[in-house]
Image 1 (tube, rainbow, N blue to C red):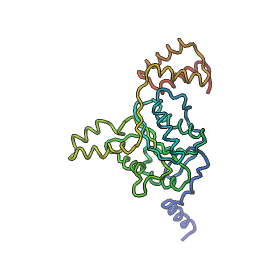
Image 2: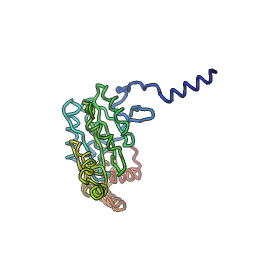
Image 3: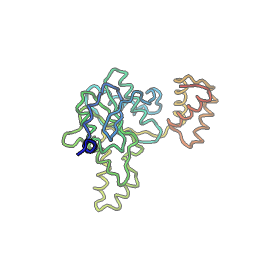
Image 4: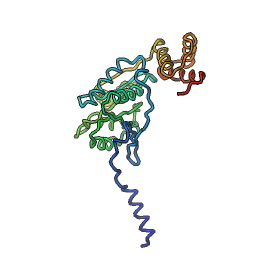
Length: 279
């Protein structure tokens, strides 16, 4: 057998059973993104987020989640949290802003972003996090499930932990536009077509019940929408007359057919560009 043949065989075996990845260096950053093929935690040097003070109209959710996160960072009991409701109202922004606020208070805390598509690999991720002395917020953004989606069973591993239990140093924060993580018509369909309707519905709806905190986000009022824009203007040094700001902001939201924190930020970006402000 030639040397080239042996080398090809060795390479093929390596692909079938790759060498184990080294233990993650959790001192490299305060934020990480989980990727698979191969499994790895990629440090995120600069997290895209806004300051907590710029999130308007979500005071109750902000205070509740901030207290819960502080408790967890201090090693006290804390709950998994589901942030659900209107799109563009700052659910994911709040999670990232609270992580920054807790770090600014001197409390050690890491955040790991997990995509919905990678939920089947969550047990491998939990094994890595369990072995660390650090404390982690596992963040899953825009979480929802369709009728034939089995990923929700993987999520139960994070919330319940199976035989070993959820690692004491891991907490899950998830955001969704849906309170029960699935469309209402899907729940109604289960009731009408399943042999045991109540059992079929309970299996899926009970997933959201496993979150200790449900924090609802609702469409903002016009006053809150304008206050968000004023806050951005103050933070980034954009100065325009109030009557012009109000008129243009209302026109912008009318053309979008909606008011939300996202729409307010989009208007502000357009306004800042027209005022030749860079940030």
